[in-house]
Structures are given as structure tokens and as C-alpha cells.
Image (cartoon, rainbow, N blue to C red; front, side, top):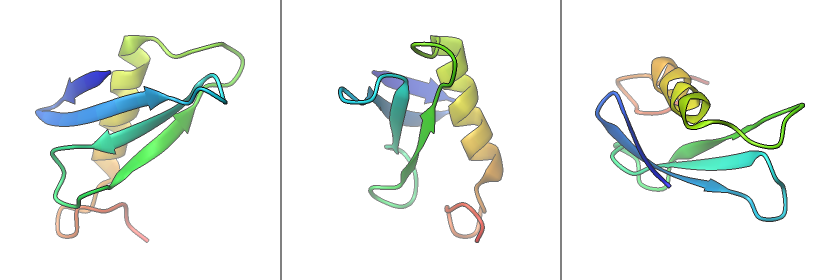
Length: 71
């Protein structure tokens, strides 16, 4: 699934062997191969709006100088 959130592009993949676990590749980010994983608890999957919010929460934490989450 392709997702655009606040002008940033992500490829989102739900793990076949772990339903409810999603890997987000930050395609438009400054660091190739960078992204994050999120998981849902108590439900089978996340809605598109919940996936967008996960990406938005990730972007809000990014250090603008490094393009990474802070240490």
C-alpha cells in the first residue's frame, strides 16, 4: 500500500506471518531504507486513517537535522 502523509511518501506492508504488524518504508525520506514498524493490539488490523496517523506520529518525532528519530 502506498501512503502519502503531509507530503511524505511511505510504502506500508502488513507482515504475512504477523497479522496487525505493519512495516513503513519512508520512501521520500532523506535516509534510504529508513522507516518504522507499528502493531495493533486487540484488533486484527489498522484502518487507513489509523495507518496515516501512525505515519504522522512518526514524522512528528523526526529530528529535522538528521532525518532520524532522536536517540
